[in-house]
Length: 476
Image (cartoon, rainbow, N blue to C red; front, side, top):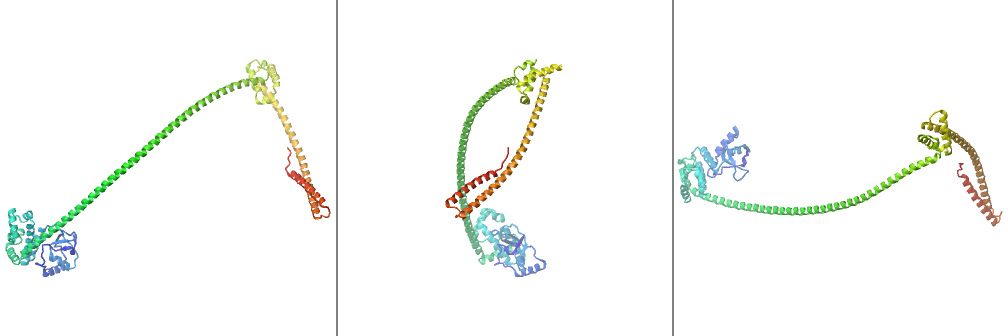
């Protein structure tokens, strides 16, 4: 993965103070990188306590040489490595780079192993030590014995170190242990380990307290949230209950209103039904009375019609006809509108005699059609006579109208002449009045007043006469 070189820390088990990097080896690697490029001959793991950084397993000289060559990022392998794997990789790198001959490299490896094993023993991690050094601590008793020797200052034996990492030989380990005991480094390692464990416990306690605090805060938040949810639930239940009560109240009121409307509707319907029954009964009575009156009127009309027919055609007519059919045809012909208007009743009997005499003379039977035809011929003659009379009357009216128009025209000319003369007379009176008014010496005061009043009276009458003459005159 692409990793910035500035994000990579050295192996936590490497003591650069006791075993610093070799400038000669770094310079050699710089030349190699400039010639062949940077190879990914290094290995890292993610930092256990800082997610933005990495820890180097091996390749310390190569990493420093790459930085000096100006390389900022590289495609570097990253693996999941435990503390023991990181330590053994470092030991392998030390022995490889030093060719197995460097005392400083061996001291650095031995010190790192002692620091790791001492940490596990002082933290009573028997299970882990039993897995990484199985032949050294085969029992809990052997572990406790070795732990007691460590605490009493006896240190660790070369066997424990060689069993931890087989790349270190006993010949290399023994001198290193002697140096560490002689210069007091072993005691410093124990002191550092005790201090580390103390700090880790302090941090663990702080973390535990922080965790407890956060758990308490979370618990309090959860408790508050539960209380808020419960309060919201209760408030919701209350709102639901209020809504339900309000809805039931509205429903009850609506039901009450519906029942009242239904009762009013029923009452109104009953009232309308009762009124409808009364109206129906009244209408029935009216219809029955009307039907009775119509029937009576029809009967009266039939009777009156018979009486009218009998009265209209005159009495004693039936004796001239030998059958009701002949009489009916005679009545029908003479009772039509035209016949009743032009044939008076006093002529009915002579006509009946004439019909029967005509049929007898012609040697035919006086059927209904014969009677109707005879009456139609009489009616046609009467209509022709009436038309002649009407035409003569129309001619007389037209002649009279022409004579009236001549008279009217002459009268209008006379009216126009009279109107003109009256207008001249008014003008003369006005002139006379003006002379009298403007020449008071001609007449006394009383005469002038008398003349003026008479002139005004005459003028008023003339104006009335002129107004009457100006109205349109028609001759009717």
